[in-house]
Image (cartoon, rainbow, N blue to C red; front, side, top):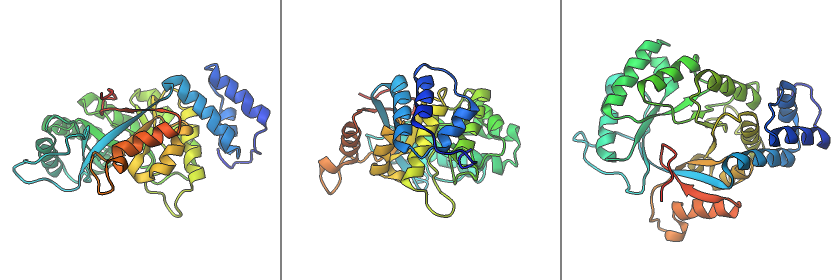
Amino acid sequence: MCGTGFEDMSTAGLDDIAAKVAEGHALTEADAEALASTFDIVSLGMVADDARRARHATRTTFLRVAHLLAAPAPDGRGSSPRSAREVRVDAPFVDIEHARAAVRSAVGTAGPVPVSGFSLADLEHAAAGNVERVRTWMDDLRDAGLGFIDEAPIDVLTEPAPMMRAAEASGVPVARVTVHAGYPGGPLSLIRLVSSLHASTNAVRVFAPIPRHPAGEPTTGYEDVKAIALARILLPAVPHIQADWTLHGPKLAQVAITFGADDMDNVSPLDEVAEGRRRAPLEEIRRNIRAAGFEAIERDPHFSFVA
């Protein structure tokens, strides 16, 4: 694990691991420990960049999301911005009655746009860990129109694999595995949990390794981009490594792209802002991705590209 006695890697050692990654060879636990302990963040980023380019070339996808912070009018009328590709219910799961009502209202607002919402950890907690109850609730939410569970925080879930399987079986897959506050063992411990989860479920489509609500002192940019790089290198079976454009900010998100991230979540769908169209979110994210040397591609929640 990071900080367990390993000295910083020599260039030769990092080159050996880079060669393994380039040739598609599996890395050992010792390789993972060595990568996590290195202070050579630039070289680590280069290995991660090679790994992401091997899988995605220069493609960097982004998703424009409209948020519902509160339930719309009881009659469900209204509309989300036409450029939104996903409508996300920003409400904790408290009980199935309130959740079902929130989803139905969101569907009335979203029209044909897919609706996501809720944390898998909230469902697990509300059900006191009862997987069958969670599965029943997910069936209800699917029937109400929910397309995706918003997130599965790997550091909060008690039994992530059974909960992920319940989501898959109900037809309401988890959009992304996230990190809520972090883990005492550092990013490598969480990456190992994600690797195990994907091996047992084949259901991790997206991993967002930067903590969303870091405990104690906020994480540094160094720690964040290192987590991105380690995730891309050590999770070759997970299709997408993600950063949050709004939560983490354009500067960190742009650096994350060069350290292995290939997807940006949570871009505002508003096309008109007071500063003018050139400063609108769509133009800003395209400009930042291109400035980092990548191709900006808008997607929908199913990872289909949007023309």
